[in-house]
Image 1 (cartoon, rainbow, N blue to C red):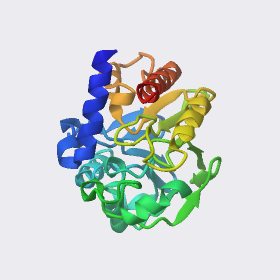
Image 2 (image 1 turned 30 degrees about the vertical axis):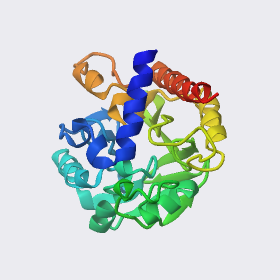
Image 3 (image 1 turned 45 degrees about the vertical axis):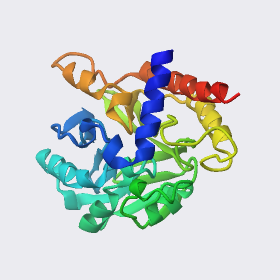
Length: 282
């Protein structure tokens, strides 16, 4: 328990110090693109998500990572045999520099529509960390949002429909996107979980990151426990053991990314960490 507390404190301190201090090598480490299942591919770095969902009418890209990951993501898309210019829709899990930093570049290069939650639109269009606007080292290139979505809204392209599940706390508009995928004859639900970690957020005391943040976290934990995500992905590869699952891919073996229990384990872990911060403040 003490070790977890120390690690959490280190992560919060590093993020508060800014991107240069906080970036894990894995954030910008190039890895080969990977087919997760059906029409869904990992085209991000070793730890920061960029998820490509292909359709006959063009493609959807969910997250890009830090600004310098834009080139890495484009190379990975091309390595799979897809065209970057065929990206028609850009989506975002949450408006923090490590996930939104490359969106402006991809939007400029492709002309894709940027679709994001109402709660994160301000942050995306200003390129700031709400509640920490004075910390310029948390800024990122702003990106214009073409359409705002609320909880339960859908985005459809080429017969593929994604649902926006608003899971606030980590950011005001944190969005967990879900969509159907095929595994042989059966249809499963893939999901890219936003996050419910505390990270750089102020969640105790009088100066909260934003009003209502504590209630938002708790509503997300409650909601996540009711969600069924078969193919578990997330904004960070480390949340769902991307490297370990990649290593277990083998012909004839079960797809390791089909892991509904893994999603619930992460939720339980992040809820415990959050409640520790609340208990420590009493």
